[in-house]
Image (cartoon, rainbow, N blue to C red; front, side, top):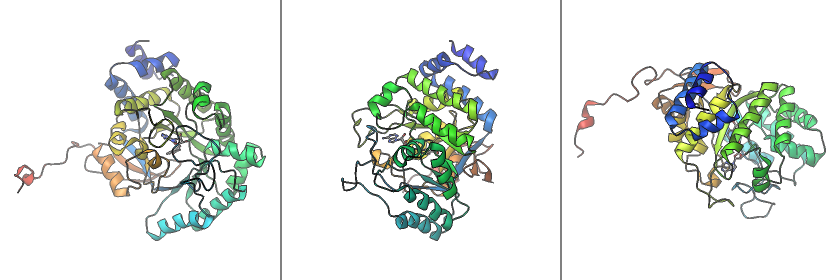
Length: 382
Ligand code: V47
């Protein structure tokens, strides 16, 4: 399929097919692909780039799944680096954040598959957080965790989700999808749920009225065909339920895990992954450039390659920092607004469900992107 034929399809609003996806990954001119993705992104969201005020809680890294790309997990309590927060400690994270007068609208919670805890640990965790901040949105537990709860505590997935919802769960994050192809899952993450099971947890959540996100972990042992297959399977479920809000491409980080000999994806691979995802996933409204994972500079550039979201202020991220991420643990709202402004987009604060909280008119929006050069800028340094 030629690039111009793909461009015509995109302009006509026709869904792209498998061969189109492969051709976009192989097309030699990255800027052609980026421009086309940017057209779609601007048609959907104009100049807006979304962000939110959030924090992460990774309450335990004890995990029975030995995913080979993971630097965060430890097999059991007592292993070097293993931890499980007490509920008081986990709630304390939120207490500290509230005491620092740094308001937030979302808590993102992702954990290891810890077989040493009772189910009440998770429901109490949610209830306690809601008690401290009744309006905060709890985006918690990947489909992999929900499927593990189903197996470990012997409850149907729908019952797990309704008990979590009764305790305060508001939506699901998109992690754990990795690459759906069985060949890749056998190599990298044979101990956790398979593609059908992952998709089925999201299907069940969507049918119950819960929204969720979805991800793809790229840049390790997968082929281009396996990436396209993964994206099309997400698109197919979205066609059925409409429950995905955001797609988050996740770049593989090699430090501290079994795959440390593999090179990390380059910036051009990252930008292409964003652009092709935006083009294939026409029915998923948002594409998030998670700055912690991507690095701030590439996350800014991705705003011109299909992304329309940067995630949030974050605070205390562990999964990527244990895998070698060099980004800060936290960005203030002013930092995020500044970096969106400098990327030439309009910063829009959203809540988790993409209701607009605030729009910030900024210097760069609609004006030349470079800051005015101060008269003294050309002076020789002392
Ligand atoms: O599921 C783990 C990935 C995910 C590594 O839904 C790794 O808004 C790269 O899902 N290199 C967790 N990736 C993070 C996640 C997420 C993050 C931000 C926002 C949202 C959202 C979801 O991180 C895991 C796994 O796919 N991961 N180890 C690694 N070494």
